[in-house]
Length: 151
Image 1 (cartoon, rainbow, N blue to C red):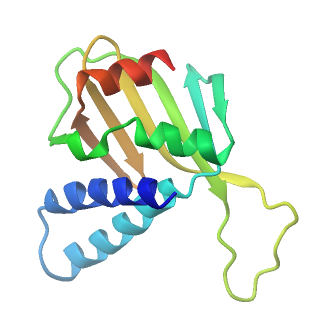
Image 2 (cartoon, rainbow, N blue to C red; image 1 turned 90 degrees about the horizontal axis):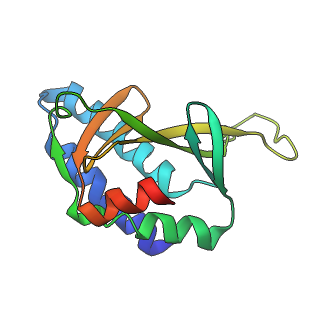
């Protein structure tokens, strides 16, 4: 899981370098974004969906680590937008237990909630990542696009 967290930190660095804000706003967004990226690395469940229909579910720790490792996150290139005509292929929904805050009771078991969504596109090596209130776009290596659209 340390390796997966390391890859997610690479994404955080890529994302944070693309922020065009200044002062306190930039710091606040950067802190929030980094926290959300770390949240993805802690996913307890990933569902692959096609138009809302679940095609595959990853729940085992080693499955999730393998999935994250296969992304070659260090090779993703941040882009400002998707190519014209991009058509959605699949969505990967990352879920984890709700964070228990001081003074809250822990549900047993704690229900999973969506923390991020990774969207792939037909016939092009691009993805979008929806984390919190932010949509980010990346060009990914061809082998990553193939992996995401086949698995």
